[in-house]
Image (cartoon, rainbow, N blue to C red; front, top):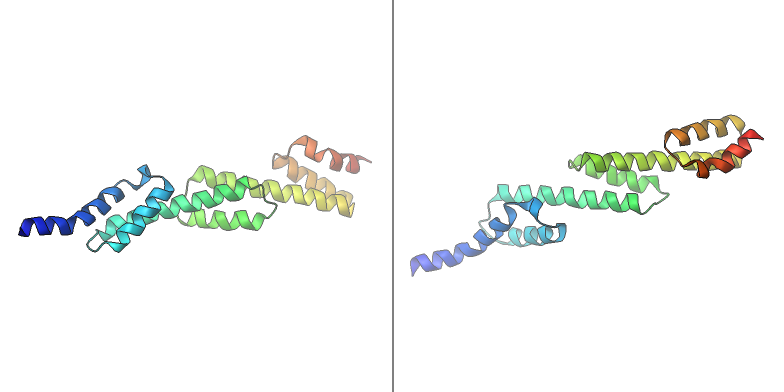
Length: 150
């Protein structure tokens, strides 16, 4: 009977730790749920829990960065904030690079628009060169080039 009661006490701990052993195999929502459950179970190995929490943090920051990039937001600050969080927790370097490229692209596009409005030839020429370097498609620069070449 003593062994059975001890096994019953350990069951939630074993279950929680089992799920947390390979956190990268879980989807983000499942990992979040497992971490929340494990926090409530007394006796869970704290190192295992901390590792799972770190993996979850990386997954969540990568998701936030992907959402900021894919939202095609004109707000570079939103992407930059997500980039800082992703970099801080060691997110996927390729994703971070994609985020930086998106910020550069947006800034270049906005600079071209501002230069078009100001009609400053030097500013417009510089903005077009930056946009071309940031891989802004030529069709998006056609109006600016036309204005510059007048």
